[in-house]
Image (cartoon, rainbow, N blue to C red; front, side, top):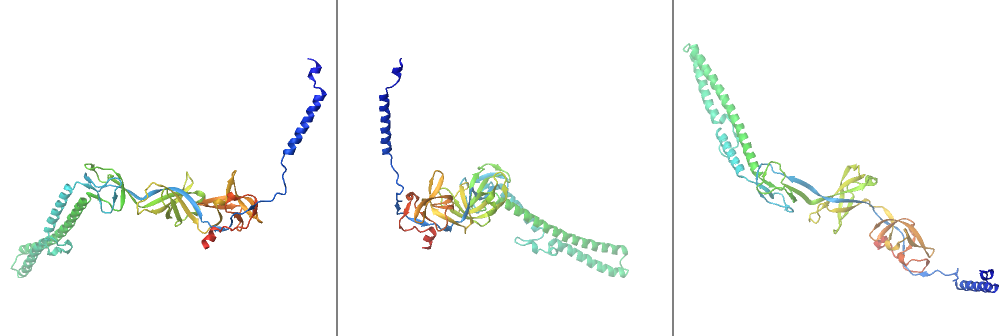
Length: 413
């Protein structure tokens, strides 16, 4: 290939440069020109004045509902189960029978104890219905018999003394009469002791009868308070011993909410502080802090507390999950605005603030949200005016419009 074939003619080069020049001029003429003196738009929007409102300090916790009392019941006698009167989920009231044991043997023991008591009472002359406390040992038949013999011995001794002094009775005969009197006195004292022993025996037999009747009564296990049967652990025909677990009852007229608060807030928790419990699909329940654990949990570094919840209508069930809100400081104030006044974009929160009649964007630091209200931690001061609806906001000049009253102003109205 020759040198003339690689190079362009000079006339062609000049034409090419000229076409580039005119093309650049066309593009520069089509570019828009910004106007520095454009006027800001006038915004006809509602505003509100920022003010401090009542914003009680709340500590949130999570926990569950537990029965107020839970008891595993056993019976105080040994025997074979005759009938189980309740089952899972049954509601029992004080005095309701729960489990019955065969009673035939216990009824026979009661009859035996009654017969032994009657025998002991008749030995000292007590009639049916007479109280053993009114019995005087000296008036009992055995004591009266021995007293009569002693009185006869005393009379014989008095006559013997007269005859002995008159030298009519010999020494041996007199000594024998003296001995008879002493024996009679000892027998009388022994009879009194025997009566007292029989009186004590009557008390023993009365106690045995009471125990036999108590065992008969204990063959029926009864509920001592209103509760719900959680577990049934026995069936008719089972042979049970004293204390064997038969039923598990839980008291649910009142439930205990057990929740925790973190260690950094544990010093703020006090007995008596109001607690609002939120349970899914149920209306919030009001309560107060009733008990606080003296120790922090070493694993979670949290403090356990309890709040009693009324459940007289049995609408709640033990084991439900609940979230608690504990009011620590009911008098706390805070700057609060509606959620509609806040716009969130690219990880930042902003409001449209009115400064000297102009609407400008203002970054804020948000706090806790409660319903449609949210707390402002930084970025606003009491007296500032902001747009009530951030979606309507843009840089501009605020027109004369009616300001929206604050929450506290609505309350005062």
